[in-house]
Image 1: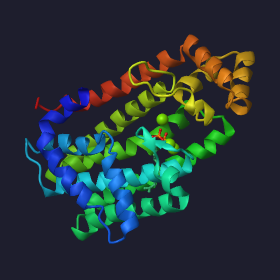
Image 2 (image 1 turned 60 degrees about the horizontal axis):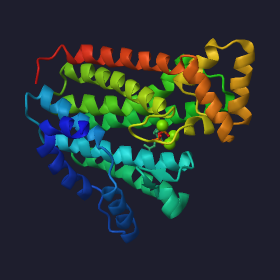
Image 3 (image 1 turned 30 degrees about the vertical axis):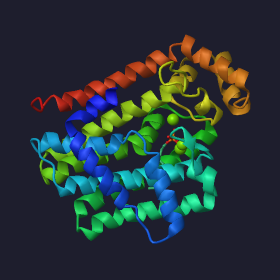
Image 4 (image 1 turned 90 degrees about the horizontal axis):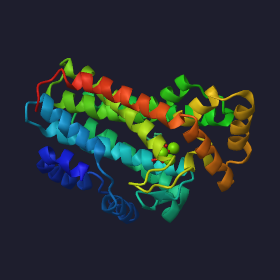
Length: 306
Ligand code: 2DE
Ligand code: MG
Ligand code: MG
Ligand code: MG
């Protein structure tokens, strides 16, 4: 599997990280411990800590240090907090192929668990007087919150432009991946030019990553994710924005009307998906995704092979 292949050069670090990460969530409150155990047992791909270690190892010429482990734990704590809150905000009952925290324990508890994880992440940086880490992660938290609010504001109006779409995905997704890469560099080479270069690299890859996630909503045989969820939630993503912007008046009205009034009608959602496919919406988004990927690779290619 690709994930295993990417993990291979940092397999040892990831193993140590997992131990440190589950310790970092411990609490004296039994209910909280039950929930954090649940979270640890249903972990995701751990893509973000992987970014931290890969960047640190590249910049640190094969060496990582305590700050790298701390950074990875803080990132995963904050990332987990955002997902727990995100499922409350989105009224979503599924996460990582199983029930979400709000589905099992209700919103009240999910909000508080998210707050707890957020504070644990901030404290982990403060207790170690790691203010670079605190700065990087706090900026990411602020931008993610702003991105979520911008998304809600725009979803209500359905008048979202491509520029606004890129703003939203940069804030809600790319910012955190940028934080992973910049703090990976910062942990091993504080105040080097690599910190900003890696932040930019993470931002570009993060944007490509979210475009791909949005493309999955139009179907993918390999991963078998449900389709049309974003349309149902009236989330305007690049394939759809492009289709609306290039449609004639009649089709534009039909598309907007479908999203506004028929977003819960499965047959209509299928028709919208078919329209977007036929009119180059997916090709357009794929092309943009590769452009971001190549911009990111340009930065990576300024470093020697490792
Ligand atoms: C996932 O977007 C975006 C997550 C950012 C959430 C940020 C929040 C504010 P999606 P999926 C809620 C920050 C909160 C903190 C720091 C506690 O498109 O498809 O909903 O994975 O992603 O649900
Ligand atoms: Mg969500
Ligand atoms: Mg969301
Ligand atoms: Mg999605």
